[in-house]
Amino acid sequence: MNSSAIELHRFRHRLPPITSLTPLMYSSAREQYATLGIDTETALQRLSNIPISIHCWQGDDVGGFENPDGPLGSGLAVTGNYPGKARTPEELRSDLEKALSLIPGNHRLNLHAIYLESPTRVERDAIETRHFQGWIDWCKAQGLGLDFNPSCFAHPMADSGLTLSSPDAGIRQFWIDHCKACRVIANDMGAQLGGATVTNIWVPDGYKDTPADRMAPRQRLKDALDEILAVPTPHNLDAVESKLFGIGSEAYVTGSHEFYMGYAMQKQILLCLDAGHFHPTEMISEKISSCLLFLPQLLLHVSRGVRWDSDHVVTLSDELYAIAREIVSHQVEDRVHIGLDFFDASINRVAAWTIGVRNTQRALLAGLLEPTAQLRQAEMEGDFTTRLALQEEMKTFPLGAVWDEFCRRNDVPVGPQWISEVRQYENDVLSQR
Ligand code: RNT
Ligand code: ZN
Image 1 (cartoon, protein in one colour):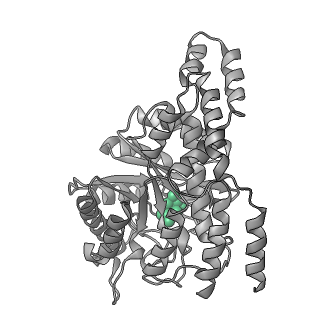
Image 2 (image 1 turned 30 degrees about the vertical axis):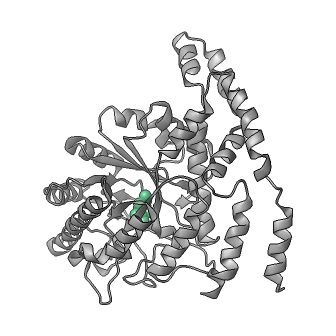
Image 3 (image 1 turned 120 degrees about the horizontal axis):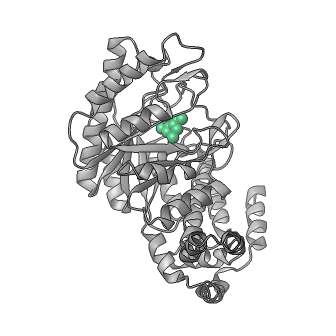
């Protein structure tokens, strides 16, 4: 045995045999929730119908296959140098398959345009569906839906810091044509896989320092978006994503929250709320209900901001619970598309996906197990004492036992058992790269 094999061996022995106890723990949890009128079976059923759109870019530090080792730029920064990063579409798909084997439920893949497959260089404004056919076929085989994103970064035409809002008509047109090509591809993805592909437009545009004109770039961005969205795409849903600031766009971001909120409302398209793109005390959970009164649907980029970084791996934080309960307590699962957006190269990348998706599902389950009717009744009656008391009591209800049962029924590892599977994959596959 080499030293990592010994480590693995030891680790396995530290894991308790949770699986055999899971059904027992579940039946007692089920009774406890039933005392409040909460049916855990209904909650599990609803949870299995909520897909999470898993972002491909956690697997290779937003490298893509056009120019994987080129500079990222545009305020996107991935820190860490953990071994085993995927270098080819085959490696990335293999890593995703590993993560999917550890995640319960049926999900979606979220792909960026730089993950195209082509033996020769294809310019961003000339990409076609055939460059993504490998991904479409793989998603079909895996039973995954597919979402898509234009990649308006990591390219010489993005070096000025402005893309769709550039004053240079040539640069602007290049990115308009890229986004148009992406919508055609997304529409084909949706048609081939059934249902609709969500295509999210995010551009890094902004200024490091105080602009002389805050209006003109926004006017140009609006006009560019109008041109991009002019063609109807029945199998595609358009989303637009705002940002507060970025590295190199500290003083001004063209696509601010107010800009896209107004734009999405005018066009009745999806607004994308990224949890890391607001002031530190400003929560997207607080925005969902307002947005849904005026917009048909939303896209969420579930992420975690830490100081300057908007893209830490999602943990089971108060905000994650709050986001999830907004979705399930209002029963708007069909109007709120849940995507993940984080990239951490300092830990095992398969584990990063697994942690983020499992946490998001756990938070959804907590929302589904909330005594919503009682809480709302107390609120309507002005009984804020009961509201607070019940909210706090729920925090120590046996959510974990219900979650474990969900994993068991979906044939994925229960509790921390999945960590040793990732370690095994690291030894067998990732460490050989
Ligand atoms: C960047 C945005 C955007 C990207 C991805 C790669 O701040 O959040 O969503 O993270 O498109
Ligand atoms: Zn995002």
